[in-house]
Image 1 (cartoon, helix red, strand yellow):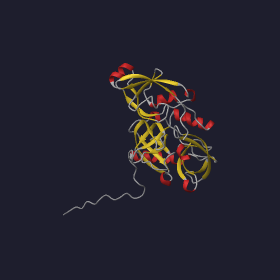
Image 2: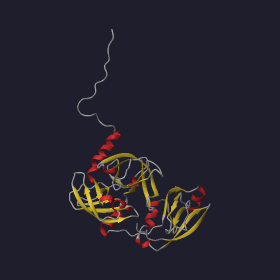
Image 3: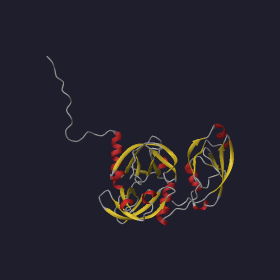
Image 4: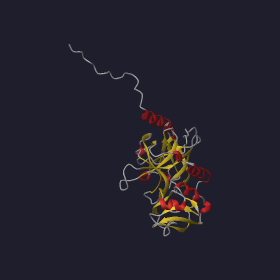
Length: 322
């Protein structure tokens, strides 16, 4: 006599509980989606789309500067289906951030986090409108922090977040959120196949960038000095760490042609101090030079080059208009 053992029946009714990862992604998306809008800009062949994140209930949204480049107005399509006209309040190509204001009220403001608390490997969720598909969600991890990479226009975006969350054209200006549904970045670019597949970038939301956003909201522009390099934080060799008393510096990966550093700094240099103050990371460099009072000032950098520490003077300037 044989006893038959039947296969377990498929559940009927409510879907089974999601695993912890899916619950986090789903919950984050549910919270962030209502705060992300589609931006429609331009007309005819020059028309385009991007994304934006709601900052205030009365219509202020943050997006990428390149999304609203050379336009003054457009239309914002909200998650609830409303379509509102917007005007560009201010843009800052140096950070690839812009602020627009939609002519409407009762927008769902995003919960803002602090990108300085992110850790490599941490879960992040990208929300935006890639390729015209509104309300799209992708998930991944923080692949790296403190990146400083050139965009296709030749601009240098400092201190970006690198993520493997899938980003596509139209995601720019959208939200990068942590697992607590806090927006910690504004998606800014997708590096093309010539540089590397699957590499998404986002401008961090922290005290520095919130200051930029506040200035854009108040005056429509940001004045700052810039050095004209791209680089990232890197450890110092032990002998230089002993000499300087610091274990990290900023490795120079690129020097902007005809920028302030051109002819003074080189690829491969490591910046360890400015006017005697340590430069342990890109954020510190931004804080040191990122204000209007530093425009035209000559700063002295301690630089590790060819096995020795040298002093290099650079006159800081404003970034060029793009």
